[in-house]
Length: 226
Image (cartoon, rainbow, N blue to C red; front, side):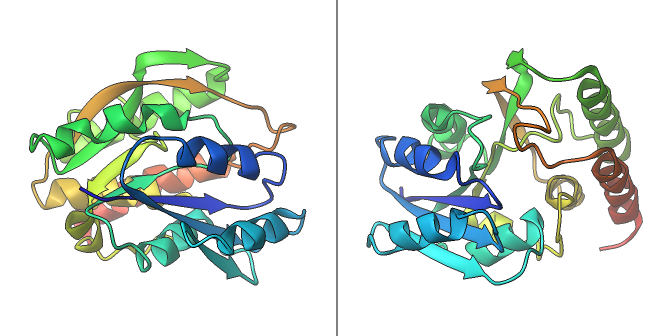
């Protein structure tokens, strides 16, 4: 099976070459799709250089729209059987991708979330832990999701399943929107343990408290609308 790895990025000049190199070394039949979301720090030039390599599909957005918009853009380029979302900051190690997609390859799942709370966590602030627990509680209460990590950025999907969700997300509401729409369609979410090493705002982490509130609202909203 062919794997499509979508890497949305914004102002990650210090990390993007390392993450691309790490993804390239994963021993899988794959395509790498980089979506630069209007970077202003030199990331665009790095992405453009990698785009000259036929193994890498590069898309450059002139404006910063958000992670969700970047993922939807990348999804239009996908030709693989399985889609993996890979953040550009190396909080998630690409060497974990084979374990993440194994349940799909084995025919045991259509969707897999990498759970940090079943694996190991380094560097997650208390506020982020609380926000993550709140999102898990909402997802399990509203959708009977049966998961331990709703906001994990490591998610893998059968391509036809992800495309069938007709996503509308723009920013960080990608995670709650896919969770809500998957469960409303009766699709089970399988979890595998992963390791996570967080970074600080000073190191470039972009998600903020308001994004947690937006995620909760997204879970509530899609409980009642399509």
